[in-house]
Image 1 (cartoon, rainbow, N blue to C red):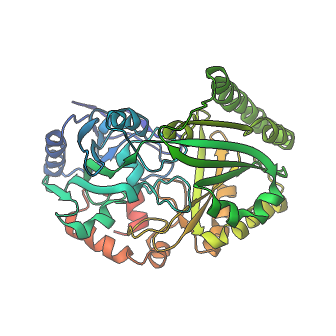
Image 2: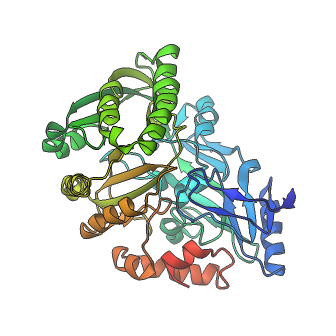
Length: 437
């Protein structure tokens, strides 16, 4: 289906564009036709999923392919525990598709609104020192290349390209199918606790290494860290989920309504931020429950924000965090949104932020009605000093010249792009900035 282009905006309202054409392909063949048609008209084409990237990676001035109708399960290899999904399938729909087969995704991030293609293409990750980002779960992919042909990449067909395609930035083609290595379904025992920040930082490396999945949040201007420890258990383990009322209070009342009100008040009256954050650190994150993995990994996020996140070597996380904390104090800023710290194992994916090194992630946020520029740029300088790599789907200012030395396979990736998309059909301003012309 094709319709004239209206104004497209991403979820964080940090990017917008009026595409020339918007199309809603329902099949692989429809995507091929769209790409060929765009090429014949001299238009560039970009696919979007849920629009949950804060950077301009999905901005499509020419032909915008909305993959909302390209969803669902293509097939399951029961013996090997592999599932193939259409590219527009939302992460929050995948557990239901896998459940009849007793399978689950090995790890997830803390938001599940993204499409599977968008999540892997931007390097989305969860937390856990023994687990890689979502791209490490990819064992195969099918792309539509710039000439409208299909490129299938898996362990037998072009296997050497899989480390490039798994975090492809949307620069190599339009993903239409993604094959994932799944694991037997499991549950998570979650313990969320507010603790003295000094204790959290002093034992940070030990905590991260000891837990299956560890992360913590810090509300600026407070001395408390909100820790989250998730322990993996077999699918048959007893479950003690949050009660419907308790979950509603946590997610809807406190997590959405109260937090939105607090952010609005803080925006209008910055002097109130310290008191609001102190209260938030007391009422959030004190619970224990056990539930299906996807219900624990992801949480509801309805308060709109903007985000920047950097990956640094795991051993530098504490120093990087403390430098940001000192920066906020020195500048006298009033920051209402928390910082988030997570971890991931090293991987061999060419454009992964965890390529070749165990990594820690420091994410900073601002309410969407506040200008994040001064805060984000100052934090970015700190992260760059620790060898940081920016999350591709989140806000940053880096360009190809700055990024090339941070990625050992950068030139291999751009050479592959030259081969698959020599005329830059899938280029946009963001990709031109981060990969070069």
